[in-house]
Each structure stands twice: as C-alpha cells, then as structure tokens.
Image 1 (tube, rainbow, N blue to C red):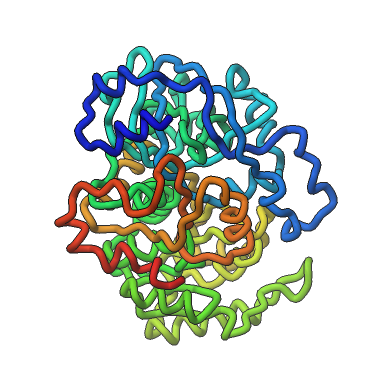
Image 2 (tube, one colour):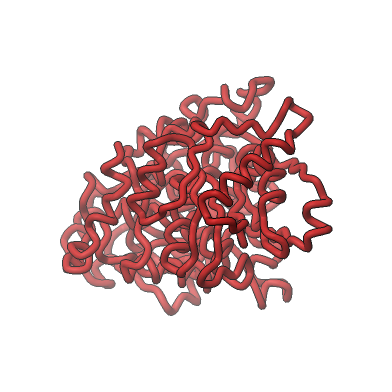
Length: 440
C-alpha cells in the first residue's frame, strides 16, 4: 500500500507504473459485521451509536470482474446511508447483500458511498478509464440488463446504491466500483474536498434541477429544509446558481449564517420560531402549518414556494404540502425523520399540487453535477475531516446532526490539503471552498 501511495504522490507516475504495482491481498476498511445486526434491538433510534458498530479491520481484496475498476481511495465522506447501515435501520443492509449474492454476500459489509482516488486496475471491457486516472465516484450501481433502465438508469429494477446496497464501499484504502460510476476528479480540490460532494451533490441536482425532478427554472421560489446540511447546502447553491430564490430553513443561528455566506437572503430559523408541527406522536397541528406559511410569505413578499425541497420526511411533510403554492411541486427523498408521511390531501388535490419522488441520480445527472463542481460553479461543503480510524465518531456526529455540510474521512491520504493540480482555479474560489470549514 505504501508503494501505491508513493506512486500517487509522485505526480509523474503513468499508467504502466500503476499497472506494475502489486495489488495488496488485503486492505483496511470500515465495516459493519452481520453478527452485530441485533446489537441495538429495542433501543430508540437516537440511542443507537455508530461508534459501537463501525469497525476498522483488514479485509481480503475482492476479485475484479468485467466492467469494474479497483480504486486506491485517498479520501471518502459520511452520508446518511452510512448512519443507516451503522445502526441497522430501517433494516440491516445484509439483507441487500444476500439478495445481490456472489462476492458481495459476506459476513461483513465495507461501507461508504463516496470516494476520491486513483484507478489501480480495470476489468475486461473497460476502455474509458485506465490505471493512474484521478477520479471520483458516484454511487449508482446498475447492470443495465433490464429495458426499464435504458431511458433513466434510476428506473432499472436492479439499480443499487454502492457502499449501501453493495459491498466494497469507499470508506477504505481500496474500493471496487463499476467503471460507469467514475468521473474526473475536480483538480482544484484536495482529495477530501473532492470526495465530499458525490452522493449529496448528485442527489440535489436530480431532485431540484433535472427534468426527472423539480425542473427548477429562473425566478422560482424554493423552500429548502436543512439548507446548511449535507443535501440542503447543495440545493441552496443550485437555486442561487440557477436564478431561483431559496428560502432556507435551518435550526440555529450558526447554520443561518452559513446560508447567508452562500448568498441566501431569506432564512427561517425553525428553532427560534418554535414550530411544533406535531401535537403528539399521532396528530399534526395545522395552525403551525399556517404560521409557517405566513412566515414564508412575509419573507418573499407574499409568494408561496413553487418548489419544496423535501428530505426530512415525516416531521415536515404535512407542512411542506400545505405551504406549496397552487400547482407547485413537493419533491421528496431520504425521509431522515421517518418514512411514514402524513398530510392533508385537500391541500394537495384541490390545489393541483404535485408530489415528485426522487432518488439519487443517473450517470448523466451525476456527471453534470460533478462538472459544475469541476468548473467552480458549485463548491464542496466540507466542514470537518476525520481519519479512517475515527469513522465511527464521524458517523455519530452526522447521526446527531452535530455537523455542518459534509464531513470527510482520510483513507490513504496521509494528511489534508493534498491532491490539488489546478491552483489558479482554486485561488479564485478559495473563500467558497473553505466556507463551511470556517464554521467550526
């Protein structure tokens, strides 16, 4: 592994140099173990602790199949699906691995759905990528054996999220991906910065910008829940970059300040306003929906949202449906506060509103989202970086919402700040690149 790192850091190693390097028989990886799947049984979600379930151990290097690539991972990041895997909720990810079968069905699961690194090997049939290429990966794993996937790969019945529903993810020194997951690394970013946008940036792009999502246009008013978080921070940037007006919902003054620094002007601190959308576990409070809607109109000069960017789910969905303008769109994914959504259908049906489901992104959408990062139009929202050994703590912080934007994890990279080739573009955007880092 040290020879691989030396070749990457040399800056002048070419494809044949990487091809000549031996591939290690095993590597360090962050895993959950099937034997631990019941360790949190009976505990409330909040009390399930990723620091207990996520372990760093040596695992055998998987065999490379046609159409796959083996990546030396310099850095990765934490997504909410890593939290779900670590707390075995809403179900153990080993159920996914059993259905997938083959080499993925193991008593351990290497987690992680983001990476930035270097191609070490490619399998038969791979022609676009070669050893030595500097890459990032999006997390859609799809075999494209079914006709439904050929207009939009997200409709393929066999599509899976790499590192969550498949094995050999990115929180490790090596990772196994399909070659059609790879994209060029933005060369003005460090390894840890480049690793952080992948899943959330692509998800936000499809959900808000793509014709498969809300198809946002100039002038739209967009309500964004969790606007300084991992997903919402990219939605905020896409809204501003695309000529829309974001209304940013946050939970603290610090998070409000982050949104202002991105250029957003209309901000609701839901903690300061004291919204309680639920009277109790079973009953929502429409008066609070109305109070929330009145606050939005106060900020916008009387406009209701054209689009609501929904991802908290159960806690907020009733309010989201209520406040959307007549004929507007509620575009939803993730449901981090619960999957069973309740809303008053009168406000949907009688006002011709649209609920649009959105899940990750196809390759074209992920490529476009990464291209905007590479051009310096959209910026990483990295706030803090952990070592691979600290992944459990990193996931715990995300689980408890004790973070801003995204948190990164160093894998093979020995320290932060490495991997930059385009210093001119970096210098032009350094304030925006570091925006979330200064919030610590």
